[in-house]
Length: 129
Image 1 (cartoon, rainbow, N blue to C red):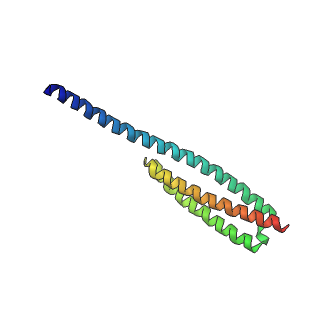
Image 2: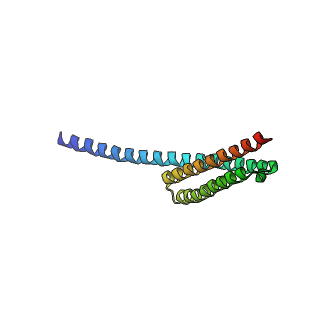
Image 3: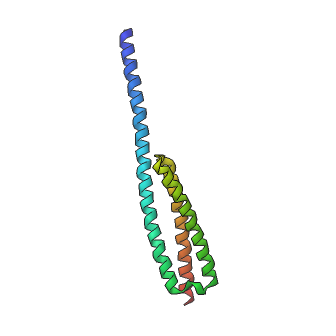
């Protein structure tokens, strides 16, 4: 009976240790996947921002003082996003995908703020015409 208990306990300990490692690997893989998904989304937003800025330049947003101030704020948000992106990439290179994902999501938030400001400029300019 005692021998059976020892074997059963050893099997339980081995399975428990393997289970903990499997959970950690799964969590790391999930954050890695989420990180790359967020980076891909952010790259798409950055492309949309470039297109919107070109369009606003064609519309002549520089003639409107309020639009110029809002564009300055949008550019600040983009600079913050660039700074955060560098942190995320550095963490991803070192394999810290949870922290990298969180910084990439912070980049997403800054980019969304910039997009909102660009939409405000567009609405401001088109409503005046």
